[in-house]
Length: 93
Image 1: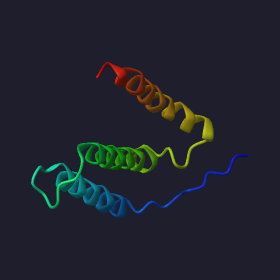
Image 2: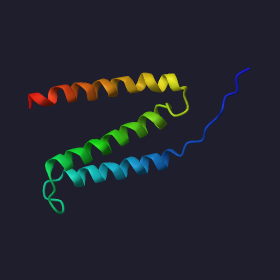
Image 3: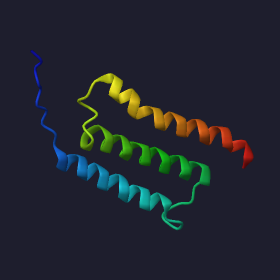
Image 4: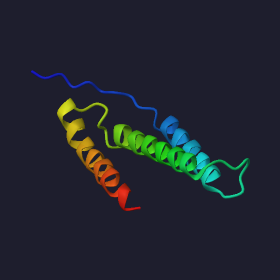
């Protein structure tokens, strides 16, 4: 008989992390906010924060954190394909 493990997730903590990351994204993307830094660094920071937010949503609100590993791999395949497509089209720019 399979045991079901009930996991308690603090959704408000996840909400506050998502809000903080959103505020940081807005601040990083705003043109005249603070000292200027290279666009490549700005883009990298924005992508890292967006991927972090997407991972938080997928893990906790889509309940992938408590699923089997195979389901996690299935969820990661579109991200891997997206990165592949972006890297393959970079020489065109």
